[in-house]
Amino acid sequence: MTITSGVRRTAPTDRPVRRLPRARATWVQGSDVVAVAAFVCVVTLGLWWQHGGVDVLLGGGVSTLSGIGQLSGLVAALAALGGLVLTSRPRLIERRYGQDQLLAAHRWFGIVTVLAVVVHAITDTWAWGAATGGSIVTGLVDLLANQAWMVAATVGTMIIVIIGLSSWRRLRRLMPYETWYFVHLTGYLAVLLGFGHQLTLGTDFMGDPLAFWWWSGLFIVTVLVVTWARLGDLLRSLTRRFHVTAVSREANGIGSLHLSGPGLRRLRVSGGQYFGVRALTPHLWWQSHPLSLSAAPTTAGLRFTIKELGEDSTRLLQLAPGTRVILEGPYGVFTADRAMGAPVVLVAGGVGISPIRAVLEDCGPHQRPVVIVRVRDLDDAAHRIELERLVASRDGSLHILTGRRQWFARHDPFAPETLRAWIPDIADRHVFVCGPASLEAAVAKGVRRAGVPTAHIHHERFGV
Amino acid sequence: MAGLARRLAPAAALGGLAIVIVGVADPAIAGRGEATATGTTATSSGSSGSSGVAAAESPAAAESCDTADAVTGPSVQTRWGPVQVAATIANGELCEVHATVWPDGDNRSAMISQYAIPELDAMASQQGVAFDAISGATYTSEAYRESLQQLLDSL
Image (cartoon, rainbow over the protein chains, first blue to last red):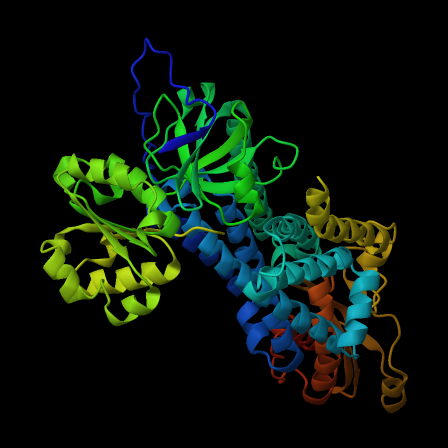
């Protein structure tokens, strides 16, 4: 590693460099989350059933239409609230699932919300029109002109559809991340706009005070959870002070950002976790970059390794020492403690080398880590010397696979026979994979067939 | 900063437009809240939460059962509001039945009553209490039958 700018500052010399404490485990189990979700769904559907929802649904004609509208409305609202809770990533839940899984689930909740809202809007407007002897158009006109909160609900529906379209991968690729992100934030507004008509027109909540409070309670709890989680993260990131200490070059188009500051004192973080990194310069302050630690965090500072993919990541590697940086997080559950002390295989591809290196540093000698790095050529392998040193001190081994993708297509290094010959005890190991989706898929398939249980395969996916 | 403004613009336009449209056009905010309580779809003029009361009698019924007076049944409570029927009876024969009160306190009830009540009136006038409950309006149908049954019993 060569220092290209600045001086790497270390902690005051009279204090030894210590590793920062690791991220705390959460008491929340997967079964807790499923139980809460099931409780909410069962109570809501129970109220619907008790209010004669089944009769309405099976009534035929306009009644069935209105029943579909009623049910899809409930589904849309529950999915929207669930999606908000997921994306607010409360720490108790995030420490169990990791931000990437929460956001992946958020995506599915979002898809359900969009589809259910569209079905709800069409069927209920149609039923409303038909019940008053008109069409879907006269129904819509009457709802908009005369019913409280129906303009709000209609506008909310449009926002949700726009958010859904903008998140469709083909369209999303066409716009900068932040454009998509800011549009996505209007989803909060959409959910609030939809709330009014649920109470003024929702049969389930009109005649029954218990149902009314249950429904309002769901919204209130969601608002509290989202506010608590987001505000907590914001306050934490604003009160922890960090600054750039140095920028260094690692390999072809790959550099590292070194941070330090008083904020380190209150940080708990494990190798393999990542932060939303925001550099406070006039051009960059509004962008948050998800960056993984590439070394164990110590009292001397944090290190992030970045591949120069675009203008923004290049700018991060041009930051002057002393620049203030805001860190949000840490996030992620791609940490060595997931292996529970068992031996490990660590597989990295491309920029995935950084988190893998940080996880490796958290592994003990009894875990005899086998590290496999997949890069186009040797010059792309960041941290190679560090990896060799870390592996040697842990009774493990390092394998660097270089070559073109076409070659690997014919000679799969992750075929079960190859893996077993290479790592005889692979079935007893936990496998950590970080890299492009194609690599993750190939590794997961290979090691599973080589006898590694799915629960012992851990991966981290970058990008929201 | 120009980069930020460019990326913020679509979301700001969307959010701003949404708030303006709702503020200007939504009956709940734009001062037309009164319209929401009665609802143009319901035939009643009752204020929020009360049940509609039909005013006029059918002239067709008066013709065929000229001399008969309308008798009103008791009000029967459902979870969505009371149901009450009135009937004209001549020589012990049922001439015509129509509901005078039905659930319309909330808009979905009003919507259901809108199609269920005329159908119930027609069926009850033809068949007395021996009509089938209307799907999707089970509570209203049962209460309708109950009110008519008690009316007939009281004669």
